[in-house]
Length: 92
Image (cartoon, rainbow, N blue to C red; front, top):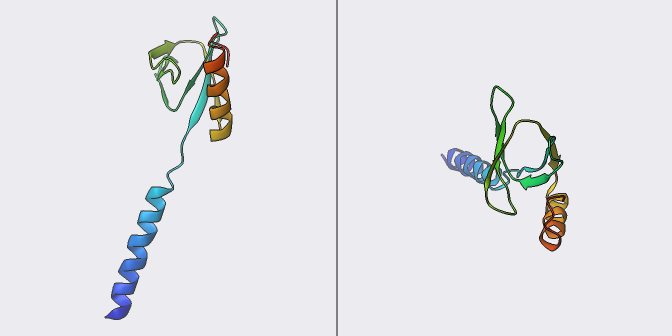
């Protein structure tokens, strides 16, 4: 019986650990028409190619048809946010 409880405890710990280690996604999205770049943590892409996301800097919803998407790691995202806050020209 003790093995059963030990097994259950190990299983619960494993799921708790896996849930706490959820990976985060960061993206730099470039509008191919204007050259303006945006930072976001998530986006959706429709069947016709439109990319919709919330810009992390302005907190506004943006939709782009001709978007280039680059995945960033957390450090790159943080650096880009700092640069954008210092120089909000739309080119991170």
